[in-house]
Length: 159
Image (tube, rainbow, N blue to C red; front, side):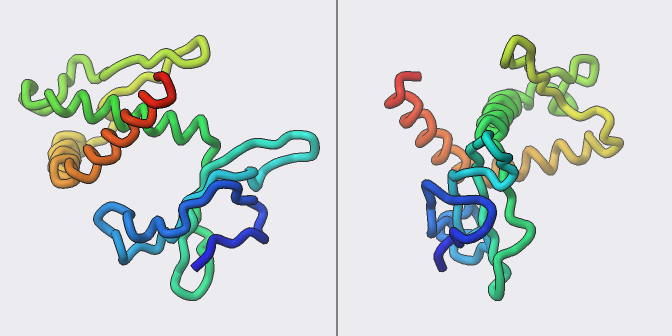
């Protein structure tokens, strides 16, 4: 099934067979493709690039397909990396985080910083963090493979 090219998002670079490698949903995923292209929200005279996850219900392309600006995709990657690094050492804390200092890091971006922290406003954080850690451990191989690939590509790019 080919990603549509007649909708508002205009694909330029595509991964048509994403459903074959979509983590635990591989070969049974509604996420059929990924694309980088011209954003659907482009206005006259302004063109942005976006990343899109193309979802298909089996009958039609889903309105639940997600489109993100590239900087947000990278911000999510930074968030994943920072969280994984933190939780790799979380066993040191009784609750797997420090309730007195829930800030994991402040990542400098664009003259300010993205504060990465444990969400202590979540009333179920003590239970949810354990579920999060279990899922992170269960998917460790999937995540690790992707992080290794990302590290290799970033190195090739000179980063």
